[in-house]
Amino acid sequence: MHVPRNRLRTIRRILFSPRAWRVRLAFIFGALLVGAVSSAFGIFSHFANRLFFHLAEANPQAPLLVTPLGLVLVVYLARRHFPGSEGSGINQIIAALEVRTKHRVVSLKLAAGKLVLTLVGQVCGASVGREGPTVYVASAIMYSMRRVARFPPDYVARGMLLAGGAAGISAAFHTPLAGIMFAVEEMARSFSPRLGVIIVMTVILSALVSMILTGQTFYFGTEAVRNVDSLSDWFAVLLCGSVAGVAGGLFALLLVSGSRALGPVIHTNPLGVAFLCGAVVVLMGALSGYEAAGSGYEVAKALIINDVETDLLFPVYKFIASLASYLSGIPGGIFAPSLATGAGIGVDLYHLAPVSSLDVMVLLAMVAYFAGAVKSPITGFVIVMEMTNDQNTLLALMASAMIGYGASYLISPQPLYHSLAQLFLANPALDNPRQR
Image (cartoon, rainbow, N blue to C red):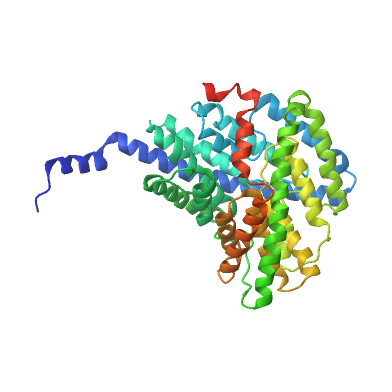
């Protein structure tokens, strides 16, 4: 069979070009490094949360000082040494996709600061998760590979940042499919097959490293068999979807409005705002027996797997603690706290109207609250399905996510992370990166 000469040259260039292999090796090394760093971050985050709970158990009065003063310390370090590291991290990556001077928004220095300061915040009892910071750290690692190989602009702006974000979600929750969906649904306004290949390969490589280091575990691992097949079960879908979705929309509205309103105050008196927010966080923690402190992972897992009882006001405490933690200006994510808040809403709805089993209503409210807060319904039901290894409830989770998304849209129609990204870009500390 005759092969045209120009095609042979193309094949040789693809297979043997030193520049092409430099790009491939940089890409592979970055993906493997993402998996290793994300896994280590997850392990340290677990111990950071446990350390706070051990402190609160040994001396219930200690958090009354540790939490507000700790948040002040985190904000001071963030503004003094890592300006721009506050918040989730996902909004920063979205902002980076919209500016030309990406190195002012995404850097390994800021990634290191966000990682360390998130852990310090968790030790102090802040209601923050590691998932958003993991997305930022993963994206920063992939973006830094441009120093090893001279990627074309589209590789840097779309391929590497989006791939890092997808790998970050995948590693944080052990949910590779959800990581891909989140990158497409929330972080990318345009998509192409070329980007798809980059994202999927990064998720595969980083997930393999994560699986080797931490094992093939499920975030809310359970072997329970659930079925949603009766009329009352589908009434639970409607009930949990609408109530939790409205609550998620309210959280998003208050988060964006609060960030906008407190912006000038934070700029002039960041430590005072951090102390007041820390006082609110520790008050919510004390009222809940410190269940509202930390990421909320352990509480949500216990509600799903063990059907434990919790304070009926727990979702209120967690809602306020998560809002105050974010508004304080410390680094930290809202994924895990949102899942815990939604789980608490599901428990309350079960006590009000037990139309389905407790674990099913917890999952339905969890996915609806997440979809309502983050405005990513597809990611919501995929991530919960993967976290529980349960495909029997997938259709119900899809319906609950869409109902929650629709209900929240009536209160807060703007996508949460894109709104926060616009506020981030308007921050005077960034020295107006759009103009650079």
